[in-house]
Image (cartoon, rainbow, N blue to C red; front, side, top):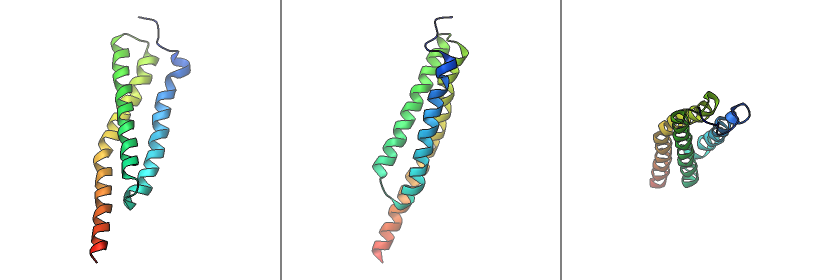
Length: 112
């Protein structure tokens, strides 16, 4: 086993907490803005950014596991990576659908 990348007792919780808080804030933004069709580029950009960060955690966790890092190190990286990638990745089509529906409602209202 190699030297740990960081102290798992002190720092393992930071990645998961940061992704969870960011996901909560983004979810609130999506719930408020997407049905109204507002700030589409901002919301989708932040969402794609969280997917990239989650993929980064996933890759770092796999590398840590392959490098035989202690449990607290690879688990602290792999867990937010797996959960974030799955949750944010699976919600992307739904967010795009909400924006399309809002655009359709706007065009139907303009036709009246």
